[in-house]
Length: 351
Image (cartoon, rainbow, N blue to C red; front, side):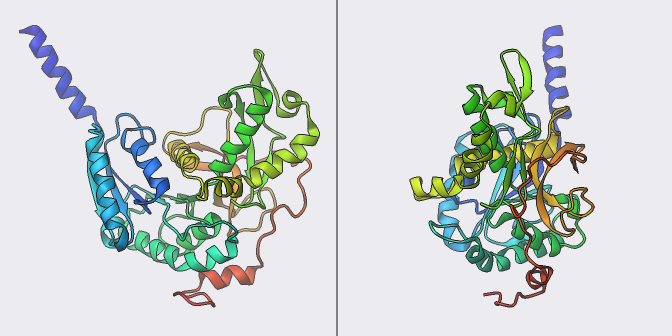
């Protein structure tokens, strides 16, 4: 009898201690990045092993039949944290009462396509999604913009949701961060978790500046600077930077498709750190609002900085010496250009 009562108590305690479900939106949910992403979210890799999830999957009407297949696969995974899956093509359903929004869907980048072309195609998408966040989502929602050009799309979405704090918006430069970390790790012959505090400054594009002046490598039982571990300054100032900057284009050239598996992993890393915080003494790269930064970056932009995160709030790491920071690595567009993309309709039209 005692054993039975104990077992019943443990079951009741486990049920009562489990959190209420959070609503997580993924846009472009029938696409290849989402296909690599959704399983990790649903099984607890992102928001916690005891956090139930309601997954909301948004895509355009022609993709709904594909989305039905994604829903069936998620159901067939029999994941205990996944309480509900809601497929939809309607923003009023997709953005309702959200705790987290991962905006993956955008006009895809194709081989040889410039980001200025992407911008024209994506302005309308992210103005619409920002307005939907403003109207339907919780004001505490955490928004990650993945669709390229990510920095610009994030700014447009944030400007279109004026009652949601700008600090709640961020864009993905964690993929570039992970690429830089991996390149250093491979060069040193260590695992990637032995490398920390690389930085991506600027934009998620070929104009970014991957910086390892503050990075540390744990090798042979001690922690040393990345420069001391690599022992090849020419590589760090040359091929390392260009490899990270051009990695996305290299993947597209090889696969004829953009990065999906690595992008999904980076999304998981980014959102997990927002939800759970960064380890003590470590910082990560994230595209965030630039206002008030100590590095001379103009205000009112989305720019990738080193950040530390605690209690779901990020803080730019101040006071880092900028060694050998190349002039012109990332030059913001003129202020008049930013005004043009934050008007109700940009100068080239909304269609």
